Length: 47
Image (cartoon, rainbow, N blue to C red; front, side, top):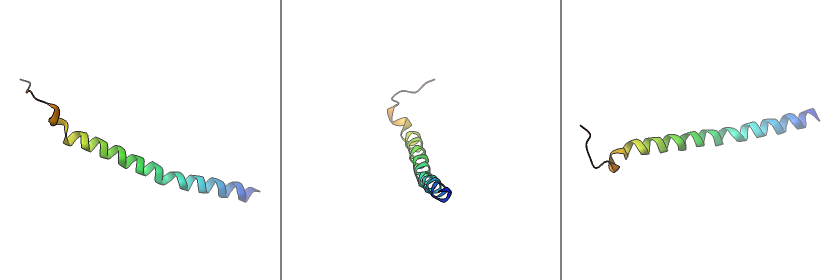
C-alpha cells in the first residue's frame, strides 16, 4: 500500500514540473513582448 501512495505522489510531482516551467516561459514571453512593443502605443514625448 505504501508503494502505491509513493508511486502516485511521484507521478503527480513529476507531472507538475513541466507545467510550471512552460507557464514560466509563457509569462517571460509576455513580458518580453510588452517590452518590445511598449513604444508602439506612445504618440507623444514627455519633456
